[in-house]
Image: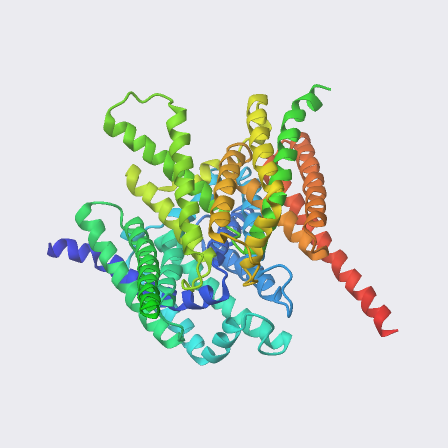
Length: 284
Length: 285
């Protein structure tokens, strides 16, 4: 048992760290309604890697990583700049289009790289179980730095996320904050996806924030609850995967996802009972 | 001229697909449920996976029993339609797109768990990403056209109701009776179209057909008929060019079509910007 715990210590630690930063970012993503942004970012990063390989650099080399980062930041900047006063095409639709074009280009390029199609599906799985302490540490440092930026600018980020129609600041000031937000966001995603896989990251972003949003509106409460749900879900999923002998990232994803549906139905049921009782009282 | 004959079936299939997806695309864009086609395709794939497992447990010979697989795929789609209809509720404050996203993630990973494949990438729908529109057969086209005519006709007859349901997503009170029922019917028919369309065109092409033409048309028009016409025109031209390019240069056709659609979007954005500039000048004079 002790051996197993030691073996699982690094994956559990990294899950907790990821749950910490992703549950926070998820509240922004959910409030903005740009749900699939992380899948798009992961796809853009994969395309960046392929471009690096096509330029003749070796796989896993620092150059390829650099190119992937720069490419991702460049594309996500376009996305930040498509924020308008009157949004004709919604941001989620722009994400869809960017995702679609990135994937289409990746499929064209895949023909020119040996084993190229692997890079398209590579983002799906991740390697949660084999994460090293070294990468746990580098995750922690990077996320703390990004976390500090977000703490400093928290008011502005929340203000922009909350404004559904129109902009809280002048157009270019809003876009500057957007740029900062999306660059830090995509750095987290590019770092997290190779570790947990794209669905793991997606679920840790959306599911805890969604479960929290079901019950409260305030940012503070949502944040605290999504941390609680995210971290408990990650640990419980890890435990389940260990006892039931299924792979860990899918276990966490399924658990957290089902929790959201369960909570949603509970919420609907309780409301119905309450309103039912109310109408009964009125009737009598 | 054998080349042209060879391209005839893909072209007919693409036009049929564009016709129905451009219409549904406007609903999708207006409702902001952009990634629903990927989610529904994955949920249908989960249905197929479950049918495989059931077959294994009941010990039947592993034949190509296509019917039960399609049946379960459809059943899962109906389940998803039910879920989306119920959870589109003011009391549930999370956007429907988030519900769709979670359903997508859960469908993918539970397929991984069910089929017990640790790596997982091989159960993901990435296999059917591109589709094989170049190899479409005439029986497939006939089947597709039946689906298109039936759902298209149904939606044409009840177009006002479906439009009202979509409008109600913006919080507009439309005074429609039984909105939940029509919402459910919408997702069910949409699910059927997606399953059939993805079988032929692949997920990515259908995804592009759904969102890009209707995004382009949103730049220029508000009326649905105009939007459908613009979308159909842009989609049709991009598909023609894409198929031609893929035939001539021997590249996969689905990325080619998507890139032309993307180029069309860029041109449209440019046109709109020029248009705005001119009307601005006229106003300032």
